Length: 422
Image (cartoon, rainbow, N blue to C red; front, side):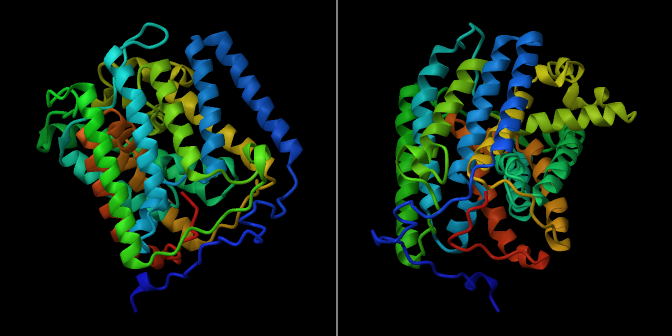
């Protein structure tokens, strides 16, 4: 029996009398004690950063809080978007990606062209080499995120929401990223690779030309998803209960298009603040390497930690901007989940435990080889006009297709149209 044909069809909800469509379905009461705890944790970290770090770290904490808040409220998925288009032909989430990327390149182009942060430092996008490392890493990540139950950003915001199995994914994500850092010199120095390629600086198009080409590509991809939906009679995504009006900002679901715009704006603010786009997994490598060092492993001798990275390994984790962003995302998602009365720990089965271990290892390892995850390589790379971001997306999609056949081996369901987990 073909497991890909077990999808439940969910009809679109257009009836104005439907309480979900009108956003009036009853929501859980806010978990006020948890909200207070999240706010206090954020304030304590802010005070520490103001006392010990450059002001940019405090700003990045605020950006991280908003990223986590947005990701949770919209259930904004990268993994689920790939699952839906591959399994049932639903491209709604993929079109929100294209909108997010369109806004991002529009904001990134002048920032990259100007080349200076708000603090006067240099600005550089994520433009990475093209080679075997990228191909293998992005494919492995694509498989891993479908087994692990979430991408890099999804892992962080799911932890904030209390999804217990994602703590397993998170731990092994860190382990995989650390092993990947140890092996990285082999993949980058011994395997074939070509120089980084930018649509803006490697083609003569400039940032204006690259911006126009990018918009055309995003429009083409969005159009293709519409064709696929029509051909496959794809079911629509099920609506999520939400407050109505301005209250929706604080409780319930956000429209995907609104989250796409907010995420692009926050990524641009990250670029302006620290001189690099939003990233996640380099912090996982740092955390794992520091733990390994504490256990007696000579990580400082690894090729990954030579040169400019050496100072990062020696410094406090709170001096690392990606670490601050990641912590902010977890706290922001925690506050958002508590505001909706949704924070709760969930059951872990043997099947999803095993899948999370394997998926976490694959994501961590793949992210290091591919110079980033769904955020650093896919979102940040494409927004930076790097060809490697597009290649990452294609290979991660291929990994997703394979993973659709692997998920049932772990007792995981084949994606349905209302699967809103990242």
